[in-house]
Amino acid sequence: MRQHVNPLSSFFQLPLELPPPEQLFRVPDQPIHLDIGCARGRCLLGLAERDPHWNHLGVEIRRPLVTSADRDALASEHGNVRILFCNANISLEGWMKALEQDRLQRVSIQFPDPWFKRRHHKRRVLQPALLLATATALQPGRELFLQSDVLDVIEPMVALTELSACFDRPAEDQRPWRTNNPLAVPTERERYVLEQNLPVYRVLYRRNQNPLPSVSDLEQRWQEIDNPAEALTT
Image (cartoon, rainbow, N blue to C red; front, side, top):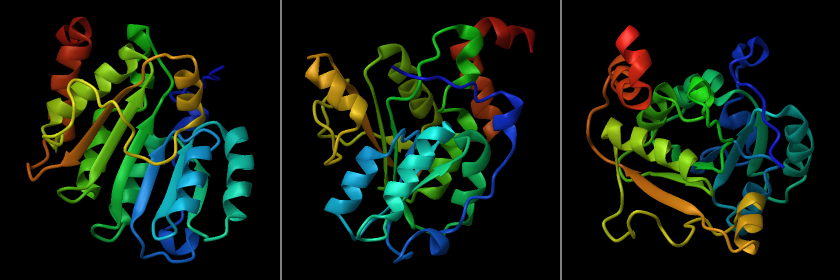
């Protein structure tokens, strides 16, 4: 069962200074995979074991999950995985901005919490500012991977990503959804969904060379699509 927390509550609005790669990983100059909303981090722990030549960072807003997950990460053989507590929309932009160019090579958002009510849309994990911070940190050709088992969750993420015009899908990928996961290790949620013979909706993007829109411009255009009634009053 999903245990939601409200990312807009005052406690989660406090920015945290996340450690740089030199303080997180044994070999800090390896490429980084950032998984936003990693839950207990089982996917990242598995990926870190399979590929010691990548560093893997998971961020999660539910602190009790982070405590045990990072304990397991610190015990990993290769020193290439960590799980940190933060609100991604508050604390990740500065961390990504401080990275050396092309250090971040893959970002994933997998099975984020669903927020169905229109008034809760600003609680979704993928917001315009976070998407543009991600696009800024990723060099052309680097990857953004999204997946969910809920259409009402994945479709807004896809719509926002494509509205930004900063990412393209690989030409060879199936439409509208990939049938396979490009990551070698599934999340716990993915395992559960597939065991129930339920669908998983996946999209892989690669950063293109288009310039970024301004945050204010993307937010305004996204509001007009996602919440047109509110957009008319602002």
